[in-house]
Amino acid sequence: MERLPILKIGPMLLVSIQVDLRDDMVIALQEDLAERIVDTGARGVVIDITALDIVDSFTGRMLATVAALSRVLDAETVVVGMRPAVAITLVELGLSLDGIKTALDVERGMRLLSSGGGSGR
Amino acid sequence: MTAQELPIAGDADVVRVRQAVRAAAVAAKLSLVDQTKLVTAASELARNTLTYGGGGSAVIEEVFNGLRKGVKAVFSDKGPGIADLKLALTDGYTSGSGMGLGLSGSRRLVDEFTIETATGDGTTVTVIKWAR
Amino acid sequence: MTSESFGDLIERCRAAEDELVRQWRTDVAASLRGRVSEIELDKELRDLLDAVLSAVGSPQGSDTRSPAFGEVRALLVELSRSRALQGFSPRETAIGVFALKRAVRESVGAGPEFQAFSDVIDELGLFTFETYAKAREEVISNQAEQLLELATPVVKLWHGVVALPLVGTLDSARAQVVMEKLLQTLVDTGSEYAIIDITGVPAVDTQVAQHLLKTIVAARLMGAQCIISGIRPQIAQTIVALGIEFGDIPTKATLADALMLALGRSGVDVAAEMTKRGL
Ligand SMILES: Nc1ncnc2c1ncn2[C@@H]1O[C@H](COP(=O)(O)OP(=O)(O)OP(=O)(O)O)[C@@H](O)[C@H]1O
Ligand SMILES: [Mg+2]
Image: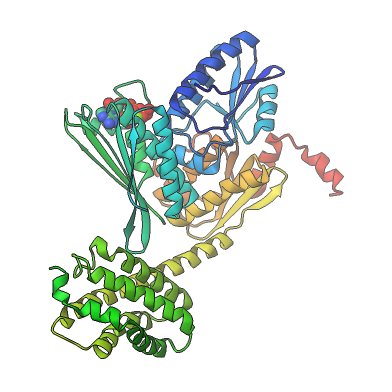
């Protein structure tokens, strides 16, 4: 199975999702990220979903789980680049992903992690 | 467009169903937000077909209501059926490890939503989204 | 009923096709008063005639709702739509279809099977009338939507701060359009703050308040924050009475206060900026 590449940039990990996500890839990503956070001692994870044209409950749950997992491992996760139509749909679906930090793009996401602030709670 | 039937037997099929629904939604001139809503609902329903129904199929077709175009998608399986439909349609109810938003959420995302199910006799969910 | 009810009418029509179309076109052209070119009209009518004859010749030839009439209906929808856009009246549009009866009667003669054919044309004429009305509605609602977008500009107030000053009554449809536009502007301008100013909105209902709330949550998912300004006492009452959780959404009395809040949060030193600009 093809796995999503995780890049290490300084003290942070970056995943830029560029393909149509299959459920098994979503599960693999969740496992890989937990492992890489521990292995690298990363302090932050940026998940870039600019290219995703939908986020359903399965992907949404993965994002929430990764955020919770990383917190347990003393790292912060920020989800960046969600498109307006995707955001509107997620809200209607009933997923507001409370507790996940978000940013408009990768650059802002990185900045957010290094400053420790964020629009999530 | 004539009706298109796709099998749902694995994770890759769920992706294919999403792509086919997207293509149909673009052809029917749904707005970007409406396309996204329909494709998301299709993703939820195709996954349910796979996870709970043990696999099945999706039939996607363009429908008309006078001048209005729309896309209809029908998801069916020959699985165990849903014993308590009201419960299954409740936000947050899951018999597995999901978030229980698939059915209730996709009902909010489409214009028409019907379920036919009987214990031991499979489940068929039909959704329609109309162009605005 | 099967195609037998039409006897050899279809074959006779096919044989006299050129004469039939010529006759038909003359009638139609008179009602359209030259606003559609001869060549265009000729093609339109030939396609339609061909589709009608094929449909009528099929086993479900007298049921205009059957799949056999799919192409005919599609052509009529297309015709109604273009006539509606060009500003023709519903009468001028439907007459084109009814005129086929006369053309058939004059060019191939009216045998006993003509009545069945005539009934089919009547159905198709009514269908054209209906689709015309719907097309017209569509044209109007599209125009309304465009006006709506024009009427609700999203303005950039500062680097990273956009504002949506809403004026007038918000209904659900309008709320949806403007909110989508606001979210898209956040992406297009790379803005992290959106101020929704509702000073000019006299009242909101549950649905609109819900739209507002959903937009704010959607903006947060995208990585932006919304601030609401100018909530009138009456709207505040609605919000509270509806039990809508505005919880930790920042609200400010005026647009200016909201801008100050956004600038403060994004770390702009307002005093320094003002000095820099000689204010
Ligand atoms: N095709 C089906 N066959 C049998 N049972 C089904 C089917 N679809 C849904 N169900 C039942 O309905 C419940 C609710 O479905 P729903 O999609 O809302 O939630 P979920 O799949 O459990 O979680 P989520 O979709 O949020 O990840 C499921 O847990 C399952 O018990
Ligand atoms: Mg589900």
